[in-house]
Length: 73
Image (cartoon, rainbow, N blue to C red; front, side, top):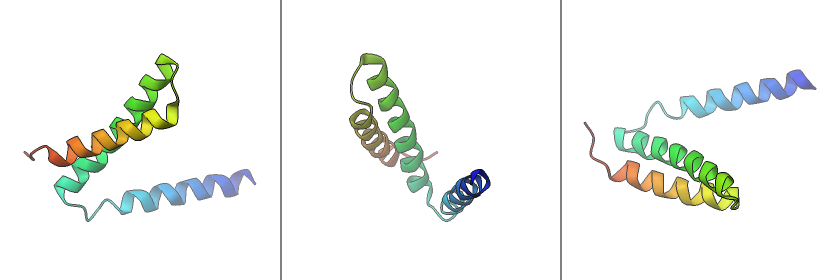
């Protein structure tokens, strides 16, 4: 059972990473911003005693918006 779960996780990660190969730089920035925002929002909510899921959703949305709107290099 443990091996099947590990295999599933590895396959999901591989599929997730391969999906990013054809993204434009703007899409990559939005994805990165969303991921960092979600992590930051969840962490801040956890530290302040708030609900983690809404913090992650708000942070992810804000991070994705900022990442998409920032100009590229």
